[in-house]
Image (cartoon, rainbow, N blue to C red; front, side, top):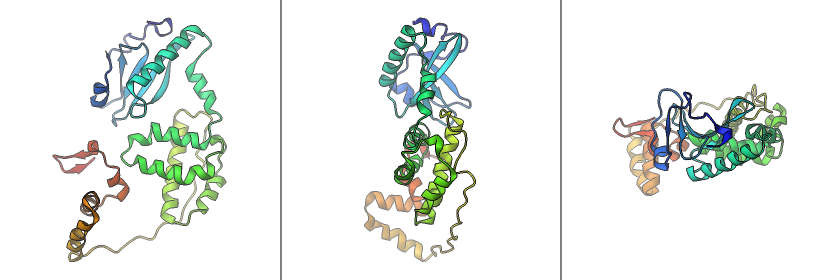
Length: 267
């Protein structure tokens, strides 16, 4: 065990085991956040949220203080890759007393661009959501080409408004605004310390006109059987939308873990 990570297996870290890919995939969330410490590589910690999201952390000490360095979401960094990363960081921590990966990470992100922020937000947060890939698509498709090269911390409300004015579809503007606002809220709460405000806050969009047209009882069977010509996968997806009222993006990105098969429910 390295000198930089002494005492990590103390009373604060009772949940210890040799992590395996199978265990990481199957570990069940609890009512509260909990951590599992790897006994194979010193300082590697798996954190499991009540929502089911899982992240890798490096635990280390600098100047007598415990430090936590986030290494990424489990579904974006494999166990073998994160172990190699922790080994390298442990080696630097032992050889260089001035090295602090958390401080270095924060310093590097002070100049992060909007494109950098999008990719971090997609990997660390959106990837844990059922409809996250739709949000990732919207940010990459509409935000990155316009604001991507700007420093994330320098984006102003006027920049967001200008970007939105370039979109002809009201529904697209509303979805993009919701996603860029969510991204900056996440940045303020998490590890982009240079971002202290949400530039999308306070921007209002004209509400879409409510759609009152619904299918009649006579029309429903016509649509139901008409879906047969859409192909096996598409027809099943269309029927799920018809039965549940789910949005196309929600159905398209549904995962097995989002379904309660015995209860016939989306979760």
